[in-house]
Length: 220
Image (cartoon, rainbow, N blue to C red; front, top):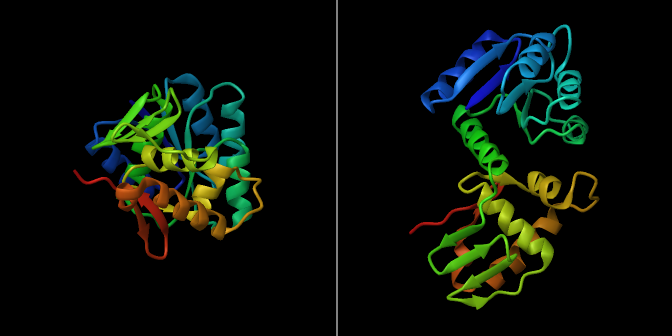
């Protein structure tokens, strides 16, 4: 798989490239938005990691231009932490937003999760006696159907497809409820609570990550 890294800071490009190469990804690099657009449109790219603040053409403009011709998954990098900046990114079609400074290992986990989601969607997920059938849209434990609301199902599926990644409440709100949803953190906490109750003996697979949010963590 080929990943395009677009950032005007050479050090950041080098760090990301090093970690991607260790995971056996082929890496292309661009130092500004114009070069990034050209590489994206003229190569077979599986994922773009794009900085926002760059010379010649910023990340927002570059992604908009690319999305007009190619639907390539994208992770946006930025030192900006304001909600407004994140919402702009999700509005133009990015898949994730990572603020600087960031953990390279966490970035790799997000890369893998997005590539997995954008590959052929898995039909069934099995964790011991817990089975999530994505075709039938059902959840069973020991072959007994578990009644989840549509939003609880979507929340569980999103956690599963990002297995092992600590997801913030904001990320869950944006990706499960939509970026234009006007709820707050309590919406996520309430649904997590009811989802755990419905999962019964498997409630502990949804782990609370202190000061962050939640993650799906199944241990055999």
